Image 1 (cartoon, helix red, strand yellow):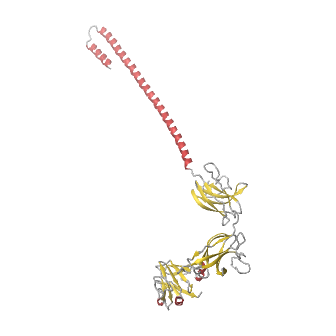
Image 2: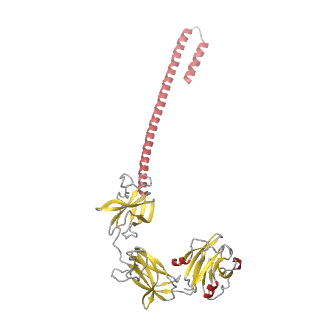
Length: 459
């Protein structure tokens, strides 16, 4: 740029100072101008070179950027590959391994089986398959299972299991999700699950291990209600009866009560007695066969409903002792209320004494009490409807209260009646004097609406 300015100044000076020998000067000027042009040309060449160098530099940078971009892509690809691997590893680690656990069993009833434990990675089906030449065959029962762990699943079968029958418990997928188990009718749907090792989840078990012998156990017991006996455990090969008999010189005597039992396992069978047991009394319990199978207990008539026998051919009769604490009730009644309309006497324990209630579903039913027996009344309508025994007057307003909740009545303090109250429950003994004075019961508040007759009798 300085050369260009210098050339221009020189040229101007030559023009201003032009003399006679102008031609010579012009020639010189021409030369100078050429020199200036030459300088410009040189500069132009340099400029071109600079441009080229700049372009080359840009190209180089672009090349580097391109390489960096490729490297970045390669890095991303590597990361994606790693993420994919991590995802696969995570899936393998998080997938729940399906499990089915089942024990050999003797089902009761025989058209049901019990599966101890199932773990399923998703909602599906648990199917019971028949055995077919060592492999699983037709489905004879199934049930839906939820995701996760489930314990003690009962599966109903299409038929009763047979003795020593081998069955498979197989976990199936729910595919498609239509809440409809269609395997094996459609072999493409609801197929069996595989565990994480690719193996079928299909344990085999014995459905019936042979019919157990008849057994029967009754332990010595402390009565909570004196007319209630408990047979603790046993097994009955056929439908029959648990029978309680009183003692007759060390041998079973008259029948006090019986309860029908089905085939199978027996547990805590309640037997209502026709009279209260007394403290330290020996009673005899026995298991009987319902024969003929008519549901009628006719023991003592020829050979009907005979005592069952164990595996050694011995009669299943056992003796036990009853402990009865003072003040133990003989019968229990449970009372409710239908608004302010009436009392409902809905239940008696033992159940045989529900026959003493005219109607367990009706308002203000009549009911019967045995003289000298002790009673427990659970009044679930208390305190809104206190229960009391009365002598009926010409009108409810003229009733005479003999005994009732909240320690009311003429017999409330009688030591033989021995009234005991505990919130909604009260106990009393129906002495002959109280029995003679009682012919109605009622609500202490709603004396007209909630009121009905009581019958007392000598046992």
